Amino acid sequence: MNAQVFRPSAIAAVAALWVVGVAVADEYDPPADYYGTVTGDPAVLKDQLHLIISDNYWTSRTGPGGVFQPDGSGHLVRSYDSLRQALPVVDRDPSNPDNVILAYNGASVQGAWSSGGTIWNREHRWPSSWGLGSSGPDYSDMHQLTPCNPSINSARGNMPFGTVSSSGGYGASGGYWYPGDNDRPDPDLGDDTGDCGRVLFYMAVRYDGAEGSTMDLEVRNGLPGQVGAVYYGGDLASALKWHYRDPPSTRERRRNHLIFSNTANPLYYQGNRNPFVDRPEYVWALFGDGAGDSRIYVGDVPPADGASETVVDLGRVAVAAAVPAPRPVVLRKGGADPTYFQARLAGPAVCSLGDGRHSFLPGPGERILEAGLAPDVTASAGLKTATITIDNLELTADGPGTGALDGDDRIVVQLAVCDAFVLDVDDDCDVDQDDLAAMLACLSGPSQPLAGGCSIYDLDSDGDVDQSDFGRFQPCLTGQGVVPDPGCQE
Image: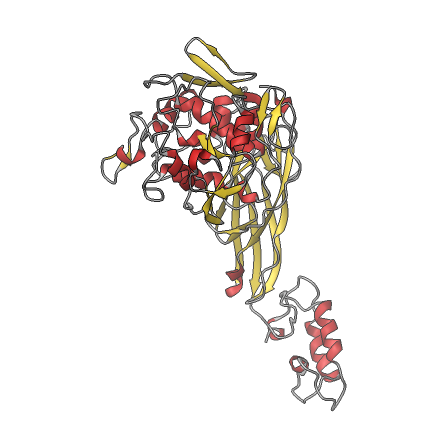
């Protein structure tokens, strides 16, 4: 694959969702043992993943604690007819449980199956004419089937996924079908491009022709075709581009989990997962054009080993004061190849990226994250620190300090919390020009009544704020960043 099919990344918008503290698995994550047999060795990764996803997790858990021991005996196959009831479960509109979300246009429509599928019908992301036939586990595999508007389904026909353009609405594109990237107003839905790319990757790993009524499915650059017992479908360059441009959305992760889970979806679960939704970093090792040369770092110059560090100093505040706002940190990526990365949080860290997986497109790129501390760190005095570690998740490496050998990057966030004292009106642990301005605003003269809030400056307790009080205040005026003597902190 030629990296030129991608666009270099721009600075990404800061996510609205803040995540605090150590990463915790959410409800759509796989069980801890699901990928337990994956070694990370690219040479055997496809075989390992094939064995895992060609199995029903819920019947292949053995030994103490029920550890998953995949044997490739096949996932739980649902009939094609049953998908009339199954798809309304896995593609349910979370905002309207009576509806389903359709492929490509993202429309929310009645979920109950209508006679003849007039409201929606079943769309094969990998068309049956591309080596599926009309039977076998691949034909009714829910990972590649989704509800679709009947007319849009008909318009797509058997066109392979791909594009000759960079963006736009769904539809035909130079002999390919483009799933569309601007048709969904809800960011939770993502767009359909990355979803479709990950379906192609899933099908190419799940089906090798060893099971009855299946063929060996693969993905290559260009139009689909059959070579012997291998059927190639979809355009690989496009699928890779979409995978990095459109990371797995909440909706896609929820769908993946519902297809898998016998508790979240007891009637229609399939018992296997799409690994490229859970672990998008697996893609380059299997489908990329060579060892990954990405290098992620903070700072201006990429270090030779890839490991970099920066300190975000939030300054000083008094006990119980508000925590200063998070500060922006520029995360940079060098190298021609794309990659996925994860921000791992330790201590009371706050990070705008959260702890999910994020992507960099090919070529040099930047994105801004904001790093801060949790609101409760000012409950007691002391130096408060937390760490955000950026982990390049790539499995391959093109030399030291790249890809899998790219050292972790650390963002250390710190805040000094001091004991509160009276004259520090703005709670920044010193008596500076801001506090002086507040003192002068209260300076009324002898025997003048105290204005509201000025009693703290009546240092001689005579009922006013006059020159005597100013004389006591002045020795405590230390300036910005300098803590006064203990006698001034009472």
